Length: 136
Image (tube, rainbow, N blue to C red; front, side, top):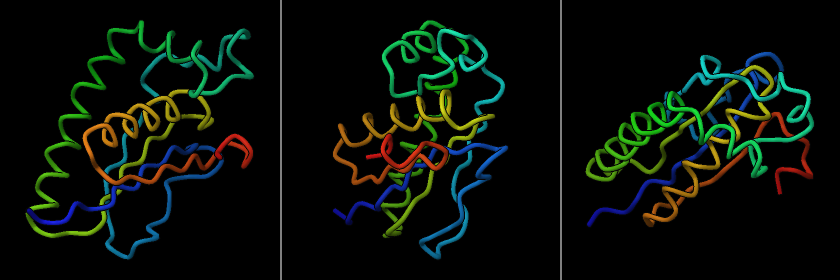
């Protein structure tokens, strides 16, 4: 079997950080815009939380449109990873953006990271809009 590509997963803010730069030199990658989903950051009770918090996960897990988005995007990423492996590509990039880069994009980046690493994929995870201490 061909070596697995390293899958680089990012969350970012469209307003603060913008789409992540290509650090691998391969160009391209997937960018998923999460702004169409309800924004938990607009609710006072969630404002200071991030997509890593169980309360945000529960909120987004309860949205049918978020689950449909997850089903579709995870299928696309899984198929791409399989094709990248067959072509012996060594890097793949997946980025999730939302308004502030703290809630929806972080939630989906974390969820994809857990899903793919659970399937044996090698992944990196970077949250570009979170303070460094939250990223560790």
